[in-house]
Length: 227
Image 1: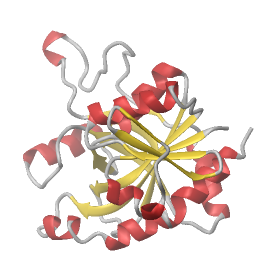
Image 2: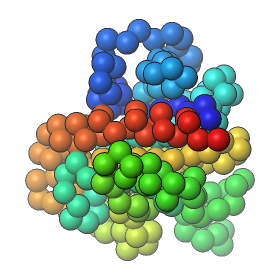
Image 3: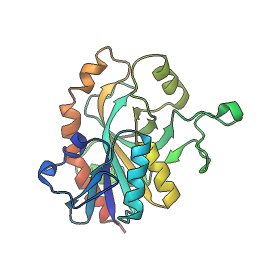
Image 4: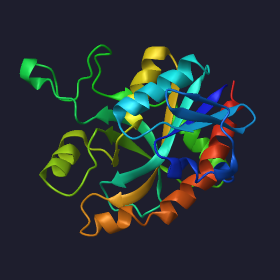
């Protein structure tokens, strides 16, 4: 199975061992693409849902990805420790609201779903466990908003019940769904939405990056070996 790793920010991509020294082999729509292992592509496509969707579409159509593994940091809605790994089992877009015309909150038009599913999260979790990696499954809420403590964050948690909140994963999931491509997401907790020191946490996430960088490429390689 042809697997591609999609990050948002270069520092997430650079968490992969040796990634900083890799030359890119092609740039498409401003995004450099790298081969991080035989048959495994990787890129940092930019922050937010539009950047994520554009990059995922390139991975699907230009490079023929059969599974996109979206990886990066995320804000946590519970008390999981910084650096904890969260494997998405379901995903929502918390900033989609057409309730004014009678739709349920979070309904994404065209595909007409309110919740997206990741590909075989138990299989992915088993692959991580076989490598001695501890992770938990949970819902990821995506939106074009850096989630911080306040009424909006509380509304997201009360309405969608995510474990983590970030800005790209569900846009990649939507793109994969429309292209018939498998999708998975692995997130490392960088900060906590309701912590008084959230900003300090976010800008000091060495543990989150270290934990992510150790496991994401081995997971991609294990996925690529599946039939």
